[in-house]
Length: 340
Ligand code: DTR
Figure 1 (tube, rainbow, N blue to C red):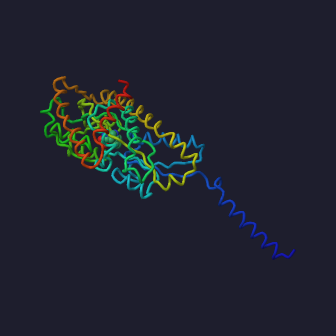
Figure 2: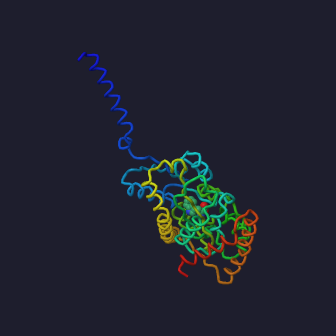
Figure 3: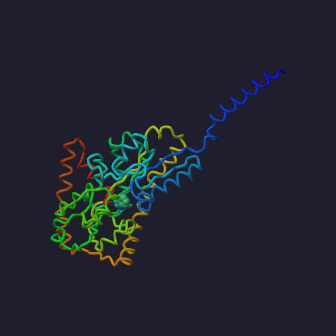
């Protein structure tokens, strides 16, 4: 055979091999997904993100690899949903309360309906989502949902009565802000990551949230008082870009589908335990005083919240949503999961 034909056979062979290797998924390495989160790494939304990442990588036997971006390094609190729809991140974790008008159905879990803890809240929210499949999520794949534990007041000044809270600037978002308004406080809205600076600068004198933040954001250093209100929870969602979801192999999709309610429950349990730890830590390290309202005082605080749910039902019914049914469902699911 001539030298030139040996050479051209060689070139063809190399070209064929290159094509073959490029088309082989095994050689392409694992499927890489990016997961954006808005608060700092040690906080509960990011702890649950790392757990989900580990579980997916383990259950898919390394077929999927997830790069996590805590602390708003890829997307921030308010552009999470749109950033995932646009594909800036494949996956994102968002606090629905930061966009109250956008997630009407699921934000109903932050009405004062007596959800007692994060585990119950997370299971209720997941069921509510499955029942209503709200339009707000039609452009994404919902991977899981969960709620915080109930909200309490953390403040620089002791708050024992409705008189004490009158006009006090306290940070909260969404449904929780409405609650503060009903108590005649002065609610100041902002996502959690902006709160440390607002507290330091004195823009607010406290915040209204679940108590794990006393430890995770070291708010105990500035807020030496906790007033127990055990009021509303905040709902969260983890969503994936729809095209990305559709591009995943069936077995990977099945792993993620299976993990949806499990991740909701896992996060609920983690959050509830972590709140206990955070309170103990705050008492021990900063002598934080936990104020329990007297029974008569608590009854007055609760009474002031009564119109909120009725007003919400009226408002969303005007927007074509079955408001009364949604409230009834949240109450029924809560009763079922709280074992009452
Ligand atoms: N309670 C909501 C949500 C929330 C509770 N803990 C954290 C930690 C990090 C970010 C958000 C949250 C809030 O006050 O924003």
